[in-house]
Image (cartoon, rainbow, N blue to C red):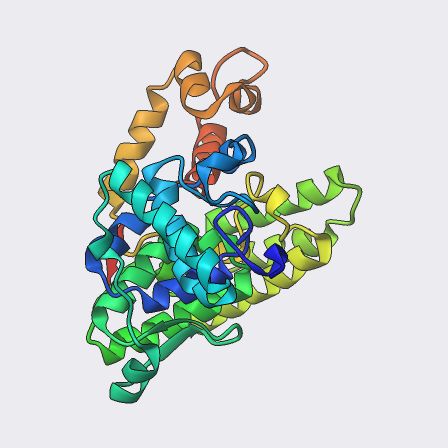
Length: 338
């Protein structure tokens, strides 16, 4: 057996194996636990061989409860790729560490996917990769939670595909609450065109800083500035697609730009539908009360350089723009009624 064919949490970088595993998990407590697990990649590089269930190949880390849960899932998913004696040894070590970490082995229950598919309608949320199949409301809610946590690891087209298929499945299962990230990529959030225009202009500036022509962004921003009424959803979706195409052409869809500009869909569908003008006014009042120390504390020293005028005072209009941009990167855990 070649260990290059075996994946664990340290090598499943695109989460494709984990998506396949999640389709089989039949334990609600285990799915709930998985939604909050984090992976310490740096820590695994420093582990000695005795901290792995497969000591010979340094696979399936068991140093923490979190890693032991993930290792058990990855091993069970690939057990048939090991010789029987090796598989039994690894399984025994995993069971021993489950006991050490106080984890009940009974929570590791799996579905027979073939029986599930034959018994009821099954939806594939990522059909291009044949991943993330859901056959119940419980499956769908679990998939939505994982998408909220890991969805930004997918490409923009994959996020859109997932969200659109999630909405179709939700209609079938009579689910009326979506994670905000799903609603965004399914084009179901509202749009603040002023904010969209600002984020397109930010791309033009980034183009200049990276030695590229930003005139396409400048023209698009100017066109957005002429719009007096919020367009229909189909037109906004087309705008997001056009913006994404431009981002790809400039290389801005790369993860290294994630902290500089939000993706095309985040830039267009940038506002919760239930956001009230009262809340917006309240936010504006709070910004007006901020002093320099507050700006640095909340947004960083770089933000102060952007909003401080020649007279040393804070330009609150510029501060509002900084706040809008920063908000685009806040974690989105809420559910949206549809």
